Length: 127
Image (cartoon, rainbow, N blue to C red):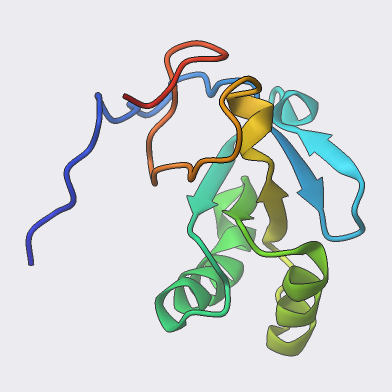
């Protein structure tokens, strides 16, 4: 199976992630800055309600306790859908969050966040 084409270099281990704001299941706002000093694993996918994304979430939920890291599942799902999925699947070690794309590209309007791609600077587009 061919790999997807990426726009720009993939982040290397240890790369500092950009500023990222998100909405938690309880609809409060969070940010990566709050996790400064922790190892953070970011899972990114469109929806937990797809078989591949659900499997990824379940797998990291099992592995998270041994990783010693905070695991965030960043999705485009609504908070109530994330909460329902996590409750039904027993997800306790992965925090599901929804990203606001305008938090990264505030002047560009809503556009999808390509998997594994980060803009070089705030306001930059993934070109």
